[in-house]
Image 1 (tube, rainbow, N blue to C red):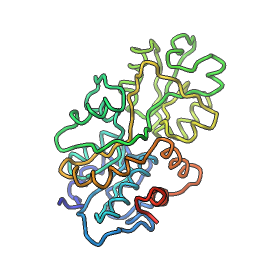
Image 2: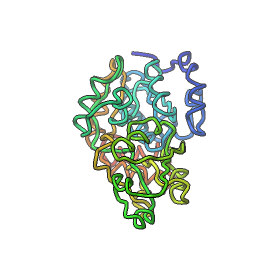
Image 3: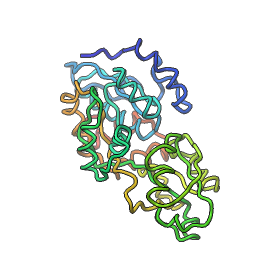
Image 4: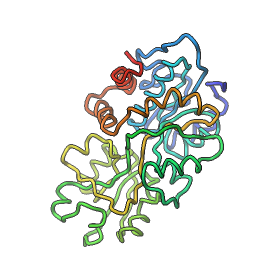
Length: 318
């Protein structure tokens, strides 16, 4: 079994992480970060038999960290020694970390991961995306069973803008006579569903503004104060139910299905699947929204949220 420390390899990633993990501490620091303690603040291994060592990573996004903490705790319950490397950054950074054997498992989203490796894919549905993804991954990586839960990119405008201009769909934007500005993480500008996709599929020319908080408060604030016309907010964000936003329909299926899926190193896929597939079997979009709401509204840390969710679903916890 591979070592869980990997410190020499990790040092090569620190500079990239510092540039991409918005405001987060170095995730490869020797100490523990405040959101990812050694055993999830009360989640202890339920077995005396070690299952080996694994490194669980997460994106620099609170919802992804919650799912990563669920993975970490259920692996500990199965007897694994788990090292957490959370808040690593965006896709180009953490995928490089996986290729460098610095991470063993990380929550991903099927459609975006597929388009990273196969930008011209025509797959759209959950099943088609997952089937194609398995063949698109580079050597050394594999995906396990995907969950029903989706946390997809989506374009959102204010309710006021939608009602004033009669815009409820991306297709409606073609008839809008005003300037359209979109905001999202910097990589959105080059994604297939970014400005180029809007122009190709919907005939809409837009200006782009980089806002690097993954659809968080900065993006929402920019939509509400009119700095941008619409912003990329993930569909499991509990604030989308506030009544302040309208998520524009995507009749051309420009944005692929984005099911939550464990991305793992392929030599561990078989054994990790036995532990993580039961998580994917019960994780739904509605539950993911509730998990996110506990973080946003109750300000709970990811370890507490994960522990209670696992206990509620008879998967561990206390």
